[in-house]
Length: 461
Ligand code: PNW
Image (cartoon, rainbow, N blue to C red):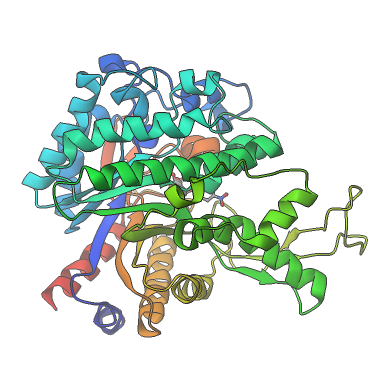
């Protein structure tokens, strides 16, 4: 409602950013153009059964060829910030060695186009598309990959630092490490738990090395940070095994990243849990100093929260190996098309928990959004009241956290466009703009117009 919208924007600080996010592999297509080499996602998409419907990112939203009109779309929607990622295999095709000017040129033109439209470019250096050659050399479980990442980051940084003020090293290292190396659901599709834990550390090390080097080479005060996917982990009851299961979930999802980044050490309880599972963080002397290099902003990606129990179906509290049970149980909420439960107050609690545990660290919401089974009319327009309600309730949750003291500087919706939703392919649609994949026609959905209204009202004060 109009009064609801007025009340909502009144709860957000002046200068609050409104924007949208995307990532390279999910929208660009053009996978063999201008010297780009395969990433681990090009390879993984060709593994039979890895991706729903056998979908692949070869064309995606054809953004590589439609960039100027996609930027115009952001401007039309009245949004001031665009978060995109740079494809490492375009910029440095072998994962090491010299820059590929043709690949870098795309991002150079994108930044200029955004600035010409009055949109602030936010660069994410790594949104999961590792050059295949580096995976062949061992990937993120191998220490050298952290150094390769820092070297690649500086190629991008030196080219764009004159025009880009906001830099994110990694998007969601939990997904890279756990979905990629432990659960095999994302590229490179490995199921090796100790290797995944090594990947956690080397991702953080790569972040720290890149942060230090970018800081040292900054021409002026820039915002440098990292983006994490985080959630509130609720215990199923007050019983000790349930409380402990929630503690472990929070440890592996939130504190294992934020404690070393902010406090300079891994959480002792998580290290002990890992040891019991036969895994260990391969920490070398000096690593934690590098990982805790100061950051200016934390990117928060939020989609859902979860409830955990420490009891197996049969009532036992440990598995055959003596490892404590941790099992997700439903909160009993409505779900999105991803089957993710809709828990806006878990978002408020999460933001307040970060403000409490890591005081002084400003946050931006770098992703929040939802997939639903969109039904377009004959013009391709989607009246997505479900997605609009999701945005409204979650923006309300952000306003609640701000009212209770959290320092949150902006909100970026995931995503500008329907796109390649990783293991789910094109079937799951997160866009505020519909994409017809036959014609590549873009049609803003009702939720896009709603966000435009909120951003416009807020800016008008
Ligand atoms: C994020 N999980 O991925 C990514 O940053 C986006 O690229 C993606 O499209 C978006 O969220 C929607 O999925 C996630 O299993 C993937 O918890 C999986 C999870 C969380 C985030």
